[in-house]
Length: 434
Image (tube, rainbow, N blue to C red; front, side, top):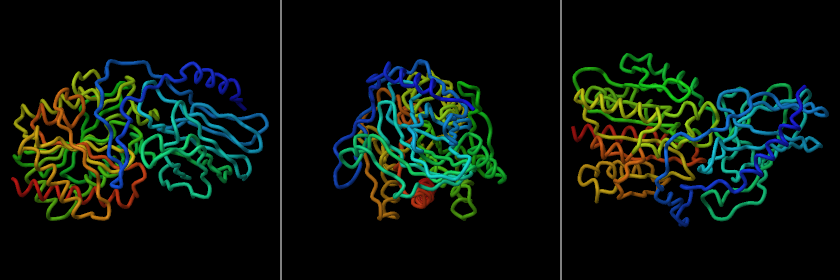
């Protein structure tokens, strides 16, 4: 049985050594209003050359006087230290892969016990607060939010949105036994699970999947191509999971792709006239290593669309350039993300002109279909530097594009509906224009 006492002491020393080292560059928000989350301030220019990344120790934590065990030995896990406080109370430490970093404190671990008992776990973070409401699972596939009576916010924050509104710590009361219980910030969609989903869609003859590059750790960067074949050269580009914890964006993208790949007459007609290219997991290293934000180069990929220092962004650039050479015209681009609440980040028509109007038409049609949740819109009028995917797609490929953000806690049934509605409305607009 392995004791974690010395490891925990080491973690505490590391915490003290990097105390106050995090400078959260892109998490500040405008004050919340009655309309909800108003979005992030303009993102600063940051270097995108590789930086060191601290790898997690992987294994099982056990204690001499306890029958409870913790593990981070699986893809997508994040657990950096555990202490037994006595009386079935434990403190877990969650640290980032490097700093400075956006405050997206991802965690995922398993816990079990030799005999059934109730335990309390305190979630504690490296210079962050408790952003994500815990999800529980007995199989690592099917997750549901922890019951509110088993969740206690400690030192609640201020306001309605943003990291300052989150509690400093959280305590979870859990019933554990010999069967492992997964505790995770959001649902686990690791590279293997995403690949399994893509494979299921690839059973259709009009869906193909192939590798367009490799990540830092040589994981394949896979792309889906959805088309009925033929000579059509108009295309749509879809990206998801540049940031590992942003699972709600992925879930909306998943629903979006499934609708376009479906059996409706609209989808069939659309696939006859357009090709959809999609990279559902653009940061497989970050996803499988349980990162808060970055890839294994220690970089936020959505800040590397100017200099292209990272293999993941380089692969997308090469792919788009090759398709342009082959005569493809990209007519729309969507980059799915997650944040504190649903929000759209288009480019303002003052800089895109008539070309970008279709993005706002799309937003309006989605909003008309889903009046129960009016999503905030925050356009940008900055085209230089490109830096983020949306701006690069427009500047370099004349592609109307948008960052499509879903809330961390947006209900999952609504995420699915919104993804479907977004697909239907985009297909209608593009077919009308074609």
